[in-house]
Amino acid sequence: MRRLDLRSILLISIVGLSGALQNDAQSALRQCISEEGATKRSLIALEKFKEVPRLKNYFKQSNAYAVFPNVVKGGIGIGGARGDGEVFQKCKAIGSTSMTQVSVGFQLGGQAFSQIIFFKNKSDTDRFTQGKFEFGASASAALITEGAATEAAYSDGVGVLTLSKGGLMYEASIGGQKFNFSPYK
Image (cartoon, rainbow, N blue to C red; front, side, top):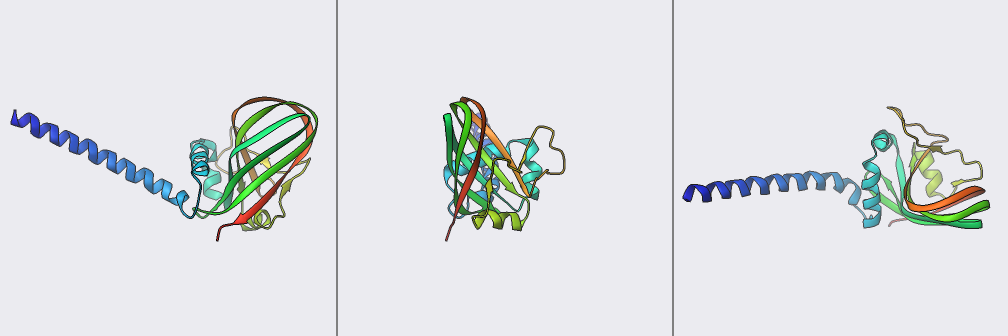
C-alpha cells in the first residue's frame, strides 16, 4: 500500500511539473505581447492570428502590426464598418487605434471579423502612427492569401489579413478605411 501511495505522489508530481513547465512556456510566449497595456481582446485576437501558419513570416519580418479584434460591418446601399484595436511594435503594445469605413454601392447585410495589418518597416509604421495612412477606393495593401510562402508579400509596405467571425454580406461597393492612432504614455 505504501508503494502505491509513493507512485501516486510521484505521478502527481510529474504531471504537476509538466503542467507548470507548459504554463511557463506559454507564459514566455505571451509575455512578449502582453506588456504595457495590451487589452485582453487584442491578445486573444493576436493568438488566433499567430495560429495561422502563413502569417509566421509576417510576424518575423514586420516592424509592427495593428490588431483589430472585432470589426463590425453592415450596409444597405450605404454601408459602414468600425473597429478598435492596438498597435504592437517590438513585442509591446505602443498605442490604441480605431478604424472607420464608409462605402457606397450595392451592399446588403452585416458581418463581423478580426483584422491585422502588418507594417514592413519603420517608415510604414510611422506613416500609420502619424495619421497619414488610409485605404482608399483602390487600396494598395497586399491581401494575404493562401500559399504565402517564405517571403512575406507586402504592397506599399503593408500586408492585411481578416478572419471572419460570422455574418453574411453581399457587396459591390467603393469605400475607404480611415485609421486613428493614440500612443500609450
